[in-house]
Image 1 (cartoon, rainbow, N blue to C red):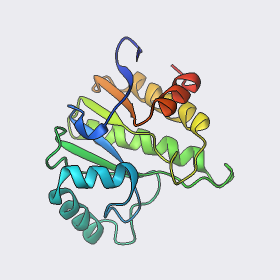
Image 2: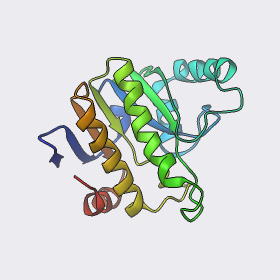
Image 3: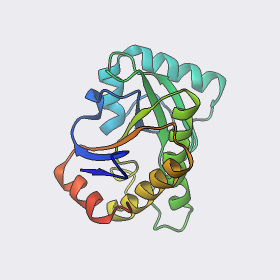
Length: 178
């Protein structure tokens, strides 16, 4: 499905096969790989991603990437030229700034994309897996963050929300704000 005159697309699929300028990684703060999307991106992208993540940890974020921030590495062996790594918030009932941090994940990733002349970007569902963010609430936050960013920044031509499961995609479509 497409929204906002085709600037936003929602689909089910494998984010590591998307032919976009950048894919977003729902990373953990270590940037050294993990489970879910993070592990898949590191495996499919190859060792170049891990090498660049180690350098980022050594030079810029020795204590780990904070939730809501975003950094870029090569896309390695994936079709995407770049990976934008962002750390989503862990859900604590919504009382510890989770909504703001999740919004920052999307908007800071889009800002990194613009700063690096990316025109197309693909997002997974951030924080809705082991971090426990309710999918319905995440759909509202992520869709509004993307919509608001696109209204202010015309450089991005296409944002794709890629969901691993049909169920996750349907929940997003039922609760998104487009």
